[in-house]
Length: 237
Ligand SMILES: [Ca+2]
Ligand SMILES: [Ca+2]
Image (cartoon, rainbow, N blue to C red; front, top):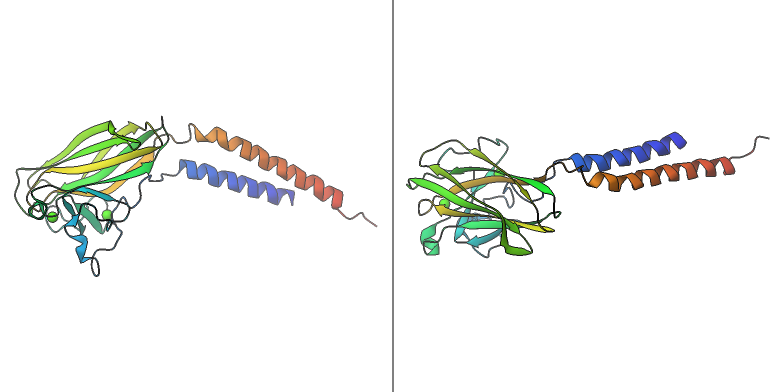
């Protein structure tokens, strides 16, 4: 009984430690696999600002395509062969008054914690532009004007294949917002985006001490069980 209980407590502790070590993406649907494009989601092309069609994402301007592999450029995501869907940041700028598309997602963070932002990008060369580019912004979700990081990704026409973007940042509040907006491209061909991921850097540094009282409490409970078993054990006749 005692050994079993210790095993259970140790198991729970390991699970907790694992969840802290685990590389959990702070964003949801970072790979744009939801909803599945196709019937009935043919509206997944030229998805306009204000639409909530693309699960967990907000389209902030213009329109974007949710694509099943890329139709042009380096085709399917060469960095992530398991990816089925990605985003063309320019759905069709003719249909949005010449405004290129962009999207954002707000996610939970811990102020002062360092995070690493990564995503895969490429471009749609179906219509010509000398350069395809997008602005990348990380800002405080409670004060969106307060920019934490601002940068650009770009590719020359015909450049291949997919490229990994990596940028560390330190969160300034309990909410952070990631935004990417196309700034250069063809009328219906922009930066392709996939696998947006934000993960804490060295996540065990602060949460671990909080786990210790739990662990100690668990050991105390085991001791209580052991004493209780001793007291209630039937006496030998
Ligand atoms: Ca994907
Ligand atoms: Ca497009």
